[in-house]
Amino acid sequence: MPDEMAESDLFTQLARVGKALGNGRRLELLDLLAQGPRSVAQLAGTARLGLTTASAHLQTLKQAGLVTTTRHGTTIEYALAGDDVAALWHQLREVAGAHLADVGQAARSHLGPEDTEEIDRAELLRRVADGRAVVLDVRPGPEYAAGHIPGALSIPIDELADRLDEIPVDQEIVAYCRGALCVFAHDAVRLLHRHGRHAVRLSEGFLEWRVSGQPVTAEARR
Image 1 (cartoon, rainbow, N blue to C red):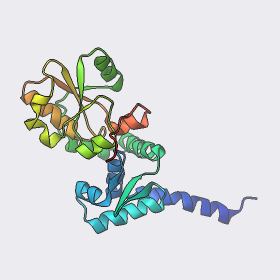
Image 2 (image 1 turned 60 degrees about the vertical axis):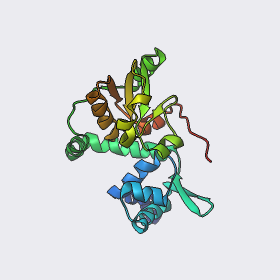
Image 3 (image 1 turned 90 degrees about the vertical axis):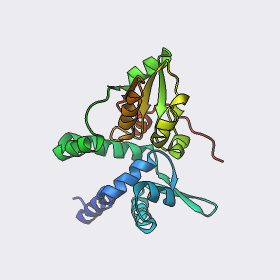
């Protein structure tokens, strides 16, 4: 006969992960950490959270084994505990999007009108191999430095309008950002179109690229 107390304890331990994931702010922090390691201050600033609140959420994620910490001098840096955590976050998004109509509605409100062309990963690789496209990473600089699609040009979305002259004019531009639910790539393509540039966006982002096992380039830490 099974030990009912042991079985109950097993599911209670598994529920610790579910509980940690059951908060929108913590999911936002996981999404940011899928881009690369960050300090508490960096995460709090990007997620628009107070330091104390961000730290409390991160501690919950750490207690559930989803993130780890590393000390660099006086700075504590958080990172996902593994690529499997990035895959878990990606799968959670996929399941929620497939089974909750409210997710699709919220995504449409967040991303804006469907007025930009997208291409998938296979088409991106074909166009780059043919020399027909330049890949543009419009995430913040620290996220690009932590890991990016090999060969991608980094121009954060809030600098794009002032740095258009850095982008080749004779090639199509393929913009990408954090993931399929990130608005930066949509906004980048809209801006580029207004300036007469031929641009499309990658249908996914760095999260999906990472989870799929594609090669990633990172800059050396200073």
